[in-house]
Image (cartoon, rainbow, N blue to C red; front, top):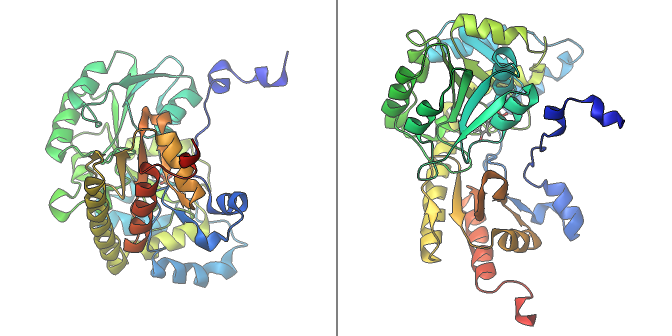
Length: 373
Ligand SMILES: *Cc1c(COP(=O)(O)O)cnc(C)c1O
């Protein structure tokens, strides 16, 4: 027997999450300075972190010998006030990835199933598989969630439906009335986890109303993050809004100190940084427009996006990815998400988007070294 066979089969079968290629690794491999690398691969903020969050962290550095507040009292108070929910409805996480896993761990057993869409965020199948539960994958419709098919896919053993709105890696968005009709159609004994990692990028008229529905639908769980529009991906802080009874169960399976002190302090400061969020949204809207116009100019098909990234069909995506990488531009291949001809690119500053589009054009025109062929 091999030592790894001690792990159950469902754990051994897990395919590790493949993150965007780090800047330092790319710089090392290409032998060029890190400053020359442009990373548009992980949906990180192109305008850096919220300055208010950075200032709050500086002010908290002398407190690092203390354990963090395991209940996140102050951050929960701030979130509760903003969302008009009770602090008891909140579950804080080491990124929203953590709360997605807490939902799986608190509610799924190997005898259960969970539903998600094709082209969905990779964390859902990973969280389901880590339990040994069965994932029911519903074919996408126009690259997005096919809500009717997802509702129909729920079986007697289904405990959770995971869906992201907007969706990653496709950027598709379902109007909230459709999400509401979906929640109303799903049995109350199935949790519906609506992942709103990109919600802050939506225009005001599309702002998410979901936390208000929880009083009527205690099986609804909404997850959000400070990683994207607030620019705090490196700190790891996210949260779930849920019925207090659901939140209580999720809190039982988390580590007592799952969110670190600096993350708690920074998140609270970032929430009040309206100016930063406004800038984040404006830069993103302009960048999405710039990238879409660029793709049209190059004759490329793209998926209209409501996120901070856009997914474009380039044909031989593995080759284009490698050529962009050789030029110091890191984007995200998404063959692992069932889209082998597409690349996902995170919205950057205008000059970033321009550099990416120029390198993309170069690659599509024949690329590096192809004249030798
Ligand atoms: C980025 C992302 C998250 C957030 O991850 P964190 O763990 O909060 O950094 C969650 N869901 C989706 C769909 C995402 O793309």
